[in-house]
Image 1 (cartoon, rainbow, N blue to C red):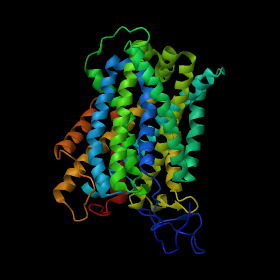
Image 2: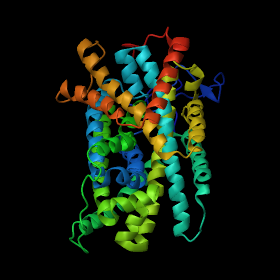
Image 3: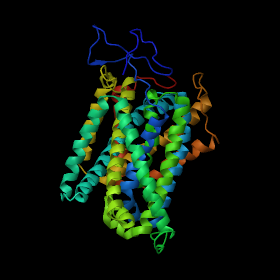
Image 4: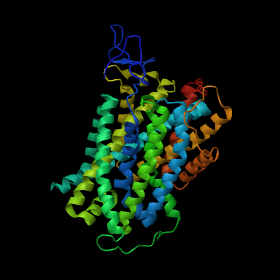
Length: 472
């Protein structure tokens, strides 16, 4: 990365000023006037959104979802996509009006005030930590399966150590620069999509009877309609990636155009892939068999359709997908901490930026530590649902914040994109987000509520004198 003038001039159109170290400046860190650089384009935004969502949704959840809802798990993923789209549109408008790092936290704190902002900002930190730990555990399962496909038999006791090792590695990678992390993300997503398009095209043709023998259809919803919604609540973690694009808004070029395209586009692309994947998987092996196979059921789906080559391709794809999700989530977790600290809701040391790499290294440490602790638990479904709970609260409040800002119309509110169908779309987004929480396991609900209570206590202890509403 180059440096700009000492006076903080712009390097290219739309970029934040780059700060050149001086003799008087601490060479390790800087605070206050330091800004993250705008280095991410549309491709990078789509890669973060698609790369984060595609991991758990396609490679970890099919077995768990099919066990609960049968073939109707495809409807569960479709419900998740609809809710995500209802939130992505309001989030896109808010993001073009406030293209700042922090995403949903930033929008809510400016639209609804400091209390809501503190609860959401700190809850987003924990929500992303839970989500990242979930992705890393999924990565560990696929790493063990990869070794098995290569003829190296290891037990599942290595799942967690592998997950912890790579979690630490992704944290270090993100310290060395957003561009490095984004380049890895772009390459992973491009290769992953190539594998999935080939596999799902062949599997879809086979499942439909165009090639091979037609499969015997199962009852669509063998356990009734209620598990379709409980499964939607579980798998909603798969759709967290579109909002993570907004957490790096402060680092995106031309945010007025690229943010809406990246958020809405990533939901549409991945939503279609999820529905097709569940159709192909349940047609190939049946929901009962998928449920028995658990987190790595898709490996056997690949073997069913394409033999050993298919199994190896899915194992490799699963590694790429869970790696992509974890890498993007570490990035977004640190940016949420950075944004909250910049607003003085956390000690401002957390927003220090490394002069050499231009990244918030303290925030990355505050992200990486808790992620490793939760990864060590290995509780896949619990991690996923708590992450979904905390994000759904934020998504519902994003929609409420949009309605509040449209009502008040502060002078600074001038988005480049406006939600079609206002106010119906944000109202539906809020209602659907909060309603999906009701279908979660009570343990996940209790943990989520407990985290929100703790963040409220923190507000009254530390942040109640901070006024953020309407402040840019």
